[in-house]
Length: 146
Image (cartoon, rainbow, N blue to C red; front, side, top):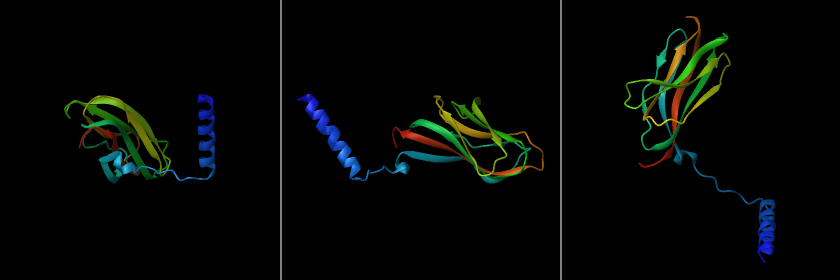
C-alpha cells in the first residue's frame, strides 16, 4: 500500500510539473536588508577608503557586496577588506578580495563571525592617476526581530 501511495505521489508530481504550474516566488526584499558601508563614488586608488560601521544585531547572516563601474587599465586596483568589531572600535580583518581592472564587476565576501559591527575598507595598491567607480554594501539576512 505504501509503495502504491509513493508511486501515485510521484506520478502526480510529474504530471503537475509537465502541466507547467507556476511556482509562487517569495519577495527577496522581505528576506534581506542592505546597509551601505562605502557610498557610491569615484575613488582614487592610491587612497584608502574606510566605510561606516553597519550594525548586524538582529540578523543571522551577513555578506559584503561591492559593485564596480569603469576601472582604469591597471592590473591590480585595490583590496576590498571586510572588518568586524564587537563594539565598533577595535578592528579585526575578516577576509579580503583583490579588486582587478575588469569593468562592471561584482565582488562578494561572506561573513560567518559573531561580532556585531561590520564595515568595508578599500586598501590602495595602484598609482595616483588610477580610479574606479565603486559602491559597497553589507547585505543582512535572517531577521531575528524587528
